Length: 242
Image (cartoon, rainbow, N blue to C red; front, side, top):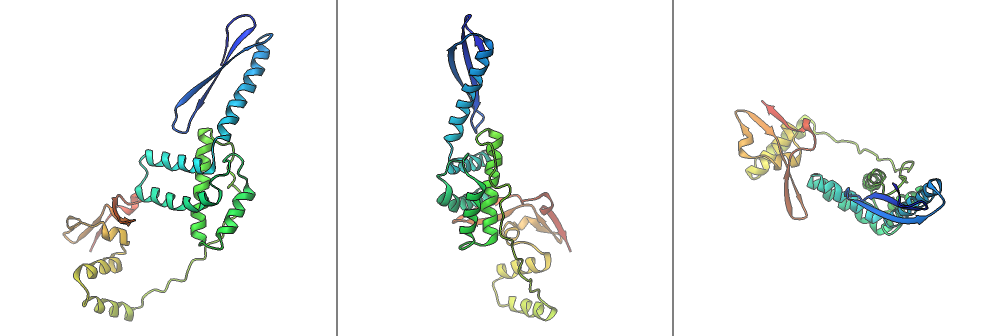
């Protein structure tokens, strides 16, 4: 915005917004020949303010801002913890780099180094976090590009699944008779109902009645802390019957 204070004096006002949505006004008073020159000076002032904002963010700052925003918006605790875990190798390797100046070549060098010590799935999670942080950064006006757009991620090789045959299923069931009742029930729920471990751990006595099992919550044990939350997708909330 440009305010004309007198014939040859203009006030330049640039409004910026941080990653939390808070607006800040920067002003500068200039003397020039007319409105056309004032518009040119305003464009330069706006570019200068924008450049200072971009140059102030590191990759670590950008990722922290993205995770913080996700947490503030009520993101699931398990996802937040997964993000923080994935962020550690990123921050260690490229965290201090200027966020705006990070290039595709630098991202791919990071991926190449990670392939020597981590699984393709872990690398995919790390690159996905960087990319998501940059997408958020573009919307928030923190950065102008996403260096992960054309990054090559190692392919995941799905392992062969060795399913139980009828003989081994009967042997497994017989072996459960010698275990404690809680473990036996948990294994039978997994075997006959196809429940995940987190779904079994999330069950209450009230969830099993009248020949039905209601799946409405999951339980995760992360870093010594029990986390109970709703299933990840709507279809995971379900009722199983005999």
